[in-house]
Image (cartoon, rainbow, N blue to C red; front, side, top):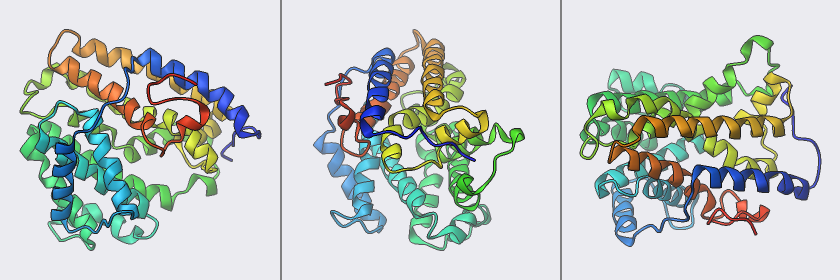
Length: 316
């Protein structure tokens, strides 16, 4: 069975997480929050309205739009505006698909079948997502664009797998140790966001960054797992990478989280090594590293202020 964290009050969890997260943030080199410009928000909302996907202010869809839009800007602050908006709308759609998988499972399971055969998707959201994927070739070289598309299709399939094969209702076998990462890599869309770092208009030389893509993908997923751990613990969620891995390794989830932080420090070091001295590629990677942290520390979604971690990365 998947192991749960040891029982205890929120205070115990806070005391464990506060130094772990603040140390991780400091070691990575987070330098404080990035302010999203009004010019960007205006362009994002205009593009969102043109999609036809409903998102009245205050709705779940609207909140997901703000979330996806915020992620795009803070992670890619130096990208051209049209690229930032493209990524922001894509991220909005991905969040909505993730949230709606259990409701629209049959449609989501057949997403790639329709995409590959050139058939319209059964829902407006999935059709908009498919159209957004076809638009990737405008902003990225064919090889990165193809990686973005394939990663995105794997994401949709991963969402379906999480519902169809819920680990809370399965008994892990010792031979399935790699399954937790297999599932996380798909649901995290790591490869797509890794290639998002390098649109062809500003980063035409793929050889300058291709070696960093595997670690950028890992970073995308595991940075989120570390910084969303408190939120998910409060909600009682255990069908996630940390808990599933803990079950396979027969370890405590707290220990797995600490292992994940240590692993990510090596990941960051390697991808910085790949782009060291290669501008503007080096700066793009650095922006993404700190932007991913910024996204999680700002706002209320991840509840990190509750454990005393401020958006500056400092602790109260």
